[in-house]
Image (tube, rainbow, N blue to C red):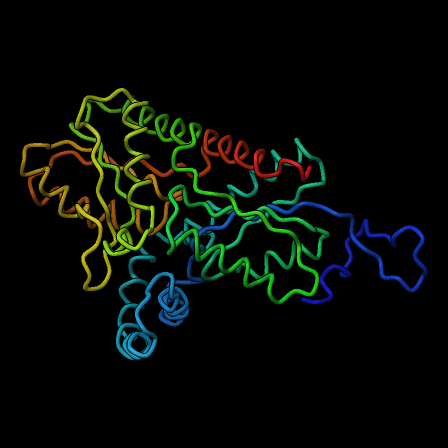
Length: 356
């Protein structure tokens, strides 16, 4: 990695006034990295075990003492969980491309942003994507951009609401990559965008598009966010507050009646109390309370993934129907929607200021 700046691209040249002994250098460029959570390489036991071990060993995700957690994880949890998680992934796996939906969508988002960036900045800005866990790794992508002449990098975690187990650990991995470099690129990290007007507008348009195609309007819109332990809120993590603000702004933009948009949290893991209400319990409660038609969306996810395609459209849907619910509508994530790409380009325009 130390020699990365000297690994040349076809347009590399020796600096002016240098001798023939000086290595050729690629022209200085700015890199953009779209960072998402990650995905296993396949759904078999060993692929799932490698992925889950990396994910669940992250102290930002599980902050128990490793002396306690690692024996439990490696000897107990990872002997069984790869099988159940593998089945969940297999139920949504794109068998034609042999990849997860999250990988396919994130690659598509990066391609769309790259096309817009070329139109706006020419070859001065290079765009790629990386995963915090799994492949393509953050380290390999940042190193690759450095090799292509990127002396400055905008690192864009695709998490609208900041949290330590998502945004912070993605940034940690980017900074860890720089620690191994002799010649580091400058790095800017994109802040949370939970209240960005274009993000709220993109969410609202996705709701309006789905509602326009329904015969009957849902009684409620449930905004389901990935959960986290309640103590993280007490320890200063702003995630809960930012989720609430996103839903409030979305409610106001849609012009829905008071109480027509509610907040819940999904994907609870482990014995601790997590942020409430839990989505799987809340939708059942709503059904028993007479709310027989609901729509559910996941504003914290920039791409559809196992938590949305399998958990929401599977476990959470079933809980609603088992409690007497009649109509369950899932509103997809923003994915590669034009409004979503517009938002990314707007944010990147701010973050690239002074660099291009």
